Image (cartoon, rainbow, N blue to C red; front, side, top):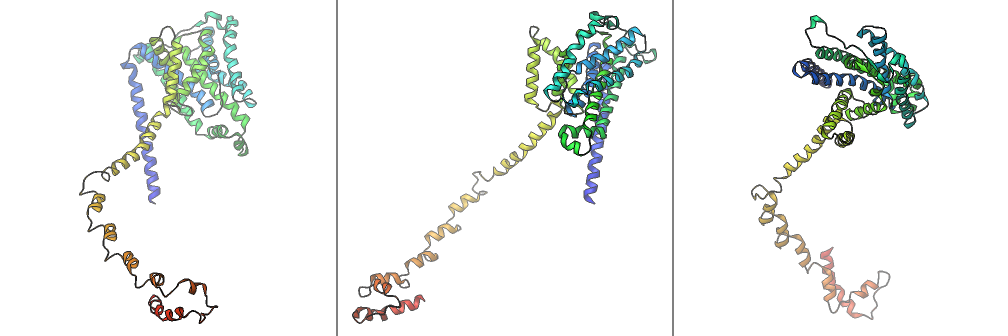
Length: 430
């Protein structure tokens, strides 16, 4: 009963902490656009839309165990879907979001087919090829995509009743979409599909034996990942208002994958941290070195991986684990400090060495009247060996050689005379 009560109390405390964390995060996110400058609000908005794309990549790489170097292509597909709808068909901004999500989902199903037969580096090369040939393809489709010049569309304007600036309204819209996307990813991972993805990631053979359809779940992993990337690309079109093929090169795919690894694989908070890394680190690298920002960017990735091998999301637990391992050692060292001290009144060792009347060892060495060992050594009248050796008329070897089967002969009268002399000591010894 006490165990159940403790478990319920722990679960309740965990839920309370999660609720307080969500309220604190909502308060900070809601007040951010009113505190920061417009450019900083724009950067926060970009972090949120990158987080949506990384949430999809996290489903595929972190929880699905597959690798993709073409995630930037799905991002570009969502962005161009929204841009074409806004420019060619003059639709509303909100109408482009479900179309971009559905289109990228179907595209992910198509590119999920190679995942059934390929894995590892081979799958990475196939997805990288998609990211490589998509920008030239967009340039070829000039009547639809605008070619190398790209497409310019109107940004999402705030309604009159909101009283917000354009950057603030865009921030809140993207924040709402990001919250829904992260909540959907969380619920998806806790469902049967998410558990199947984890089983496939850990052991495909065991998952297949348990009844998991590998082909279905691998393909769905690509489809869900592409859908989230398409939503992020649609938000990118809303925020930037311009798309071009050069904005979606294969470097974007590699940057997104690096951001996810730095943020933390298989973590719900890793996409947010990775999106911040993708957004802010290139600008910091440009400020530190205008000649070679890529070198600074690479060195920063290496430094983060050395400090946090599991990503920034796993850094707090790593630090807490290191502190917890050191605390018992520190406590044990503090407990041993009084024992090795020099206080004579508190240390039992000097007392045992300096007090001869209380130490049993000096007494056993120096007290001849109380030690049984010196008495047994010095009692010459009880030991038969000195008598047998020192007696001139008693030779010890003939009795030893003449056993009970060999009786003494009258030719040795000295032995006959010595037998009654040695009889009393043998009687006392017995």
